[in-house]
Length: 127
Figure 1 (cartoon, rainbow, N blue to C red):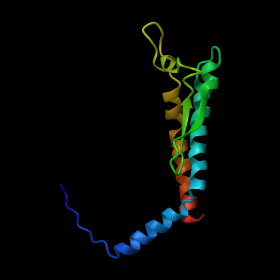
Figure 2: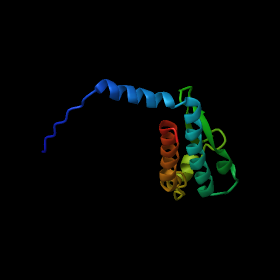
Figure 3: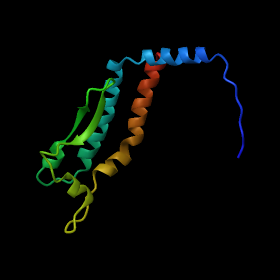
């Protein structure tokens, strides 16, 4: 195994730069990025869900999770409206799976990362 040595000079300055970058992240500005990423996922899941009655399609939404700051946004299925969502996704002994959630995530995770990364770069970099 290769060994590396490095020396970090002026640790206090690095700390100041990190603190400055974090302060630039106004949580009111970060929340919309998280919500935008969740909307991308919800829209993709809606486009892939098998449609029978439409209940499952209509149950897919975004929601703010908890009271964290910055807020955490999720794409989710409203289980009271569509308690059968997991059965559709995974299948049962008597029904073949009809995956929609995982394929939606696989399709858009790169886009979500780009949304978050680009937005955060603009916020921290001031661009």
